[in-house]
Amino acid sequence: MAIPIKLRPYQVEVGRAVLDSVLSRKGLTFTVEMARQGGKNELSAQLEVLLLTLFLTRGGNAVKAAPTFHPQADISLMRLRERLEQAGYGSFWALEKGYMVRLGRARQVFLSAAEASHVVGATAHLLLEVDEAQDVSKDKFYKEFRPMGAAGNVTAVLYGTPWDDSTLLEEMKQLNLELERQDGVRRHFSFDWQEVGKYNLDYLHYVEGERQRLGDTHPLFLTQYCLRPVQGGGGFLIPQQRAQLQGEHQRRHSPSEGRGSGLYVAGVDLAGEAEEALRDGVRLLGQDAALRALKPRQDSVAVTIGELAFPEELGGEARVDIVEHGWWTGTPHPALYSRLADLLGNVWRCRRVVVDATGVGQGVSSFLSKALGHVVAPFTFTQASKSRLGFQLLAAVNSGRVKMYRDDGSPEQHQFWHEMEMAKSHYRPSQTMSFYVDSAQGHDDFLMSLALLVEAANYRPRSARGRSAEVGS
Image 1 (cartoon, rainbow, N blue to C red):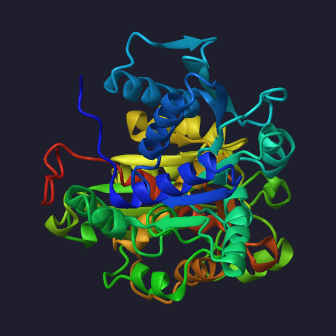
Image 2: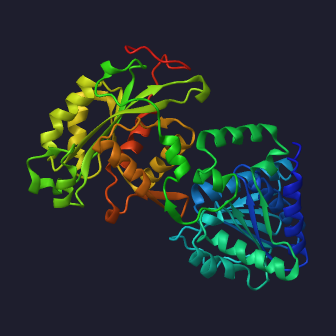
Image 3: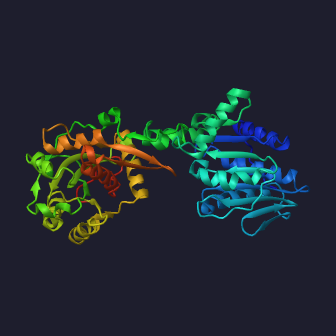
């Protein structure tokens, strides 16, 4: 028989409190926040094995909900099966209907808490658990899951990591903290990455690396490891981050002006085609103010070109120095085709170009793909993909992996910093975000082009390992 995995002291502390509430029929509701990979699922599985053992002759159901059945609840079910095998129950437990594990007369039931799931009618006699509770709808929990344990005053445990102040987990946490102040009974448990790291040095080193990669202020680092909720939104880049974004290198209008790696990538954000009224496109240099006064809400086509370097201190990660901007307002897409192809392909010989291919952008993206070949990577904006892009940009800024050229007095440089200052963020459920410039305060062409540039910087030449690669690699 395999040796059971030993729980760490902080896991044991939670387990004892939950077990006492179950066996004493106290009916408490606990909130448990553990840093990502801190062992909450292991704690849950071992609690389930213990309860199945204690109630195998008396019977009863324990219920565990997760935001999705595949893969989240499925993973919990698989872990429970493994722990039952380790405990020597190999020939005694049974899987029923694909979502229930039975030991004797006791069952552990796994259910999806997705909005469309049908769970009414299930009953929890022993324990009600909710995994990743920050991603479960409040309405779903209160209307369909909470009543499952009403008849037996069943103990409930909500596990997860914080997100914003509107989640089910955060609401229950604040209620628990208030109840604790009233009666002194601990209902909320929180163990951040430093607490977990006391018992696992490999974990400590890993999270230190994540802190270096993402930065202390990155929403994912704050929520998943520090267990601090984000506050719903606000400024996308704080002054400290904008200072980190500022570089010391000069802007360049052609590769011949520099002596760097010679590895160039680009991000291209495309305007919608409300430009039809301004057929004679104007590249915005000194004329941007007048044109924007005519159509102040009109988006532009923005191209951000960066040069890659692979300094040893970044451990193989690319640093990208912004070296040039292209900016057009009011120019129909067909009129830009040859200009963009020449700029990106012949002038800068970009190794990777990430192009906004959303909606009307498909045409430009398709043309550039035909003109430049495999170097073009179309990017379609969705809630999920834009969220990933925003988190990636924050990580690059926080770690010093993207730098803007020094002030050259140009309209492009002025517009870039205006957008960085005006940019806002909004955090949504399921640990996603949006970032943008409010239309009342301007545009976000340079902001999106920068985010696409950082995506393009994922390019890896074969010889780029801690030093600059040859241009011809």
